[in-house]
Length: 568
Ligand SMILES: [Fe+2]
Image (tube, rainbow, N blue to C red; front, side):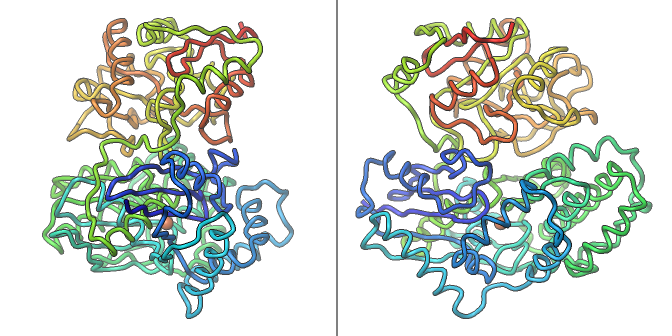
């Protein structure tokens, strides 16, 4: 059997394991170290992958990792510098006196891609780290950052002839790429340099409005809808970017752009600034995609890269008339490139260009024994096997309680998709506040998202095409369904739904049970974590979160758990 291990040791590090053209396991390091968007070498993710497959390091013949640009290579050689930068960017430390300088340094080095020696230095550091944990005979491949992103979208979409578009902050000197997948070949046709990065632009805006880069971009997107809307001609950022055929062009380089944005922000209220940035992003992205469709004459497009986490911009893309089929890889950010590197190495060595990818449940699972063991170790909880757990959960949800729902394998990617979820009534008046007070502590303007039975999607949402399984796009809701989706709809009357079908039967059964009571196949679904922490991985994590948040009800595998210390 041929195993390929993919690993990523940067922002949202992680590991993925492929065996004979099948994805066996994929998870991110943050779930084990409990530090959101972890940057450390993914030792835990690797050991969990091997344990899941029941193999030893010596069974792995091929290992691949992405990104060998200069700044990444330096951070591999000097990991302490990487740690300091993590704390700076996440705003875990008071603002340093040199804050401006640190940003300028970052943006000044942005455009430097892969230099001679970077590849061999990066390889030698990673080789040493792998040998340290018992890997011995393996061939090590370094994979281009955007090829790793492209592989995830191209090889999991189920579409065999497609444009493959990647857009992100930057990686290996690029901020985007356009490739074509045809006859089993993935060929790069165009690139967008890091200098012209629309991702860096959005990151700078996020930073300048006082939020955390690479983490709070979704908040900027949500805040934008609280601005007074105005036409694009009045957008003060409108000249910052333009689209020229299949190229994106930035008016300024990243350093100058940061200064210009900072100066402009002085004159603009924060929510309007967010609106302008979001409006510009949507325009640039949809123009680029429309141009690429007509340039290559291919109307199926698959996407990956961090920018594709912007569900509102994705909605604009979906509305492009010429676009017939689309797909966004669910772990679109750098957290997904461990799998991308493994897939691209598999493609290079064995020609694999398509994987079954019905769902994203690729992480840890825990059998009944392990769940029971965790329960026995926890004081002050009552538990029992629950043969009617779907109906039981639906009853609690219908009674305006929120429930923790832990079932099956952990999701790969930023979204909880019904295996590590907190669920509640989508039409409730009060549950949103309850969740925010006890568990999530989200900003009031951030919406929650719904999970909707695929068969009911048209009834609740407008312009539904296909089966959107991964919560990657916003949809306008049907006007007359505002009441039943009260707690999951944004101020602009859009929602970011997960459509649920056969790919997660248990979850589908649960939502059907909710429908039997409420009349509508929809629940509020938010990730199973406390504010600022990663999503839970194990039953122990789940119980700890239950205790910390004083939550009363949890469904842990087949068990119904009640917390005797819960808030009344
Ligand atoms: Fe990236």
